[in-house]
Length: 337
Image 1: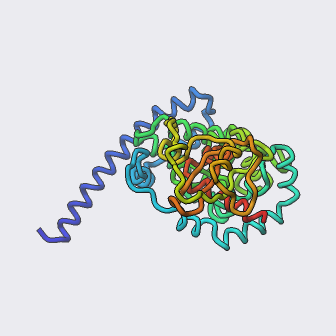
Image 2: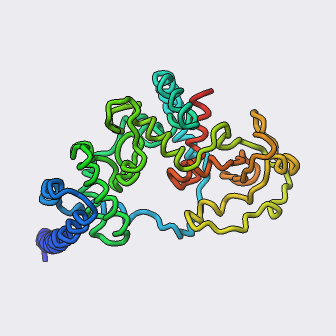
Image 3: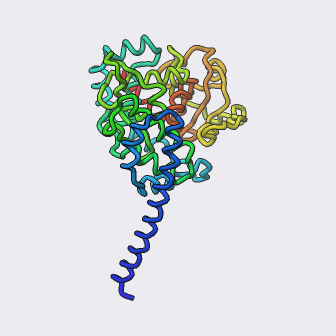
């Protein structure tokens, strides 16, 4: 058999497999439509969307390529990630955004207690201040991921939430974003948009794609809803003394959410207790004595460590990654410095 013949046969086989998958997808859409209508989506929106949907194999492949939560692979050092995500260009654009939006930021912080710099840092990390928000058709992506079935309840729910966004007046063109369904400047999932997106400029719409005011108000509302405590920092860089006995601060709790993230944290201690253990701040002073914090050493003993307050957990609620949350906090500090 020639190589060309082999490629033709392989191509025919893949086309047949795709046709079978597409047929299965179209059959599943009938079930998904009934679910959407039962959940309150209008027939007008369903009639406009469902005939346009085709299976997107690319998003299924991207989802399957994600590392599992139970992965036992070694955790890399934080320093290279920090250099890439808290770099001079992102800090510079953050300061420009901070100054340009200062009036709005001050008003939103007064209303929510969420620091101006944290709002800017989230915007910077999610979409580089709106420079790239993703170009996947959200509804096609979410329907494809729901059909694939590994996390059907999650993605079917987000697909239906996307349809409800259309019922609220969001346009289909606006429903573009990441392959996994996040959209707009703050990269909200549709269900988060429905629950927490806010109108920050008074025009009656929560336009997280084009309006800086709506973007910042929505980010702040997310953080306020997740329990941000006004007047408390996210954390502080510290030095751990040589010979420090880490067994005395071991965390003996297992988190039901993102266990691999939280298992790297120590147990909780007050700032006064950390000070008594010899933990010293790098530059800034430690927060008030009674503020609770955990210790994280992202690059191991001998490198910069961090005492992390409950507000750090709020950043983790946005994206459950220590590297992400640390970088958001450090970018926020750099932006307002």
